[in-house]
View 1 (cartoon, rainbow, N blue to C red):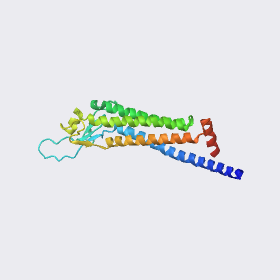
View 2 (view 1 turned 30 degrees about the vertical axis):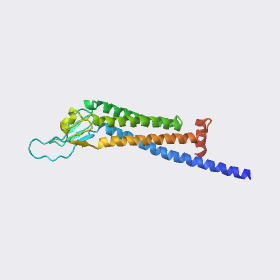
View 3 (view 1 turned 45 degrees about the vertical axis):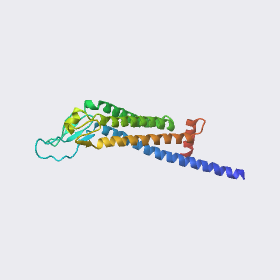
View 4 (view 1 turned 180 degrees about the vertical axis):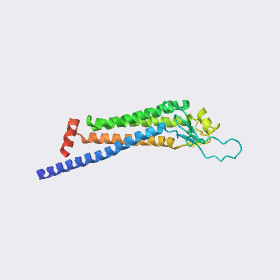
Length: 230
């Protein structure tokens, strides 16, 4: 009776491990694609001059019209009669606007951290999957933390000459005057949530890999388990 039950339990355990590995690989592939997309979004957040833009205000018709345009970490772009906006600042020199230097540095560190996590995906060929997931998770937490600080410091820096030119003299810390937040700033806020989700998922995948591996000789055991189900 015992000999008949034991092979059945062994087959069930091997089937469970096979499905475990397949589901972990599918979720891991989705996590890697989302990590790459997040890294690309980080580049857009850093370089786009669309963190703040002028709100629609009716001009009474007397006097000069208020300026319209957008502002980012590196450039202030004012609308003109030409098809191309008149942008002040130089993105090519990587010199942020003086009032937003700390914000640009934090976004730059966040960008470095998330792109480092993308590069670390190559380590799956040389290290255990659990170790790579944990490294990437900590890098993504760092990226999210720096991006969150940047989102908090950005409104505190609105009382600046660049903001006064674009948004009027009523601007102040956490008061945008005649302007409103634009899509790049909203994308940065969503990036904080994205980083938290990706880091949490990476930790979960790392824990699943640790649970899958045997307690002794995890790396060799993992190779044997994967080879058994290839």
